Image (cartoon, rainbow, N blue to C red; front, side, top):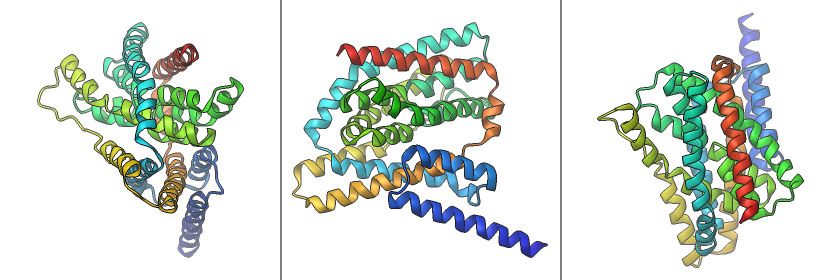
Length: 313
C-alpha cells in the first residue's frame, strides 16, 4: 500500500515536471498555462507546493528583467509617458471608489483597503507591501489575495479576445491591460498573447505603475497610524530599466538579445502555470460575497474607465 502511494506521488511529480518543460518549450499559451496549472493542482495536487511561492517570485522577476533586453529606451519612455496620466487617475479613482463601496457594504476597513490597493496598483505585490504597515491580519490578507487572484486569472483569459473584439491596436491593448489587470504576471501574460508591441507597452507601463507601491504604502501608514513599519520597494524594476539601457546603448548582438527575450517569454509562461497550480479554491471560498462584490466592482470600474480614456487619446 505504501509502495503504491509512493509510486503515485512519483508519477504526479514526473507529470508536473513534464508540463513545466512543455511550458518552457513554447507549446503552451499563457491562458492555457494558468488554467492547466489550476486544473492539475485541483485534480492531482501540487507536488512542490512549499517551493511554489518562492519559484513564482523569482521566475517573474527574471522574466521581466529579461524582457528589458527586447526594448528601446526612447520607445519605452514614449509608452511610459502615454500611461502616466492614466496611471495617476486610475490609482486615485480606484482607491476612492474602493473606500466608498467598502463603506457601503460595511466591510472590514483593512480588507477593503487591501483589495482596493491590489486593484489600484499591482495585485498581490501591493497587498504584500501594504498589509504589514496597516497591521492586517492573516484573514484580511488571505481574503484580499483570494479575490485578486481569482479576478486576475479571469482577466488573463478574457482580455486578449476582448481586445480583438473591440478592435484595439497593439499600443492601446498594452495600455489597457497594464491599467486594468492586477498582477504584473497576468498583465505581461495577456499582452504576450496579444502581440509583441502590446507586450512592450504593457510591461513598461505596469512596472512604472508598480513604483506607486511606495507612496501608497506611506499613505497607508498615515491612514492607519502604522508607525515604525518598513516599506518594501520592488528593486527588480531598476534592473529592468538597466536592461533597457544596456540594450539601447551597447552593441549587443541581436542573436543574444533575441535569445534572452525568448527565454524570458518562456519563463513567463512557466510562471503562469505555477501561479495557476498555487491558486487554491479555499482562498477563493474564504473571501465571501462582500469582498468579491468590491473586487469585481473595482475591476469593472477600472477596466471600463481606462478603456474610455484610451479611446479618447
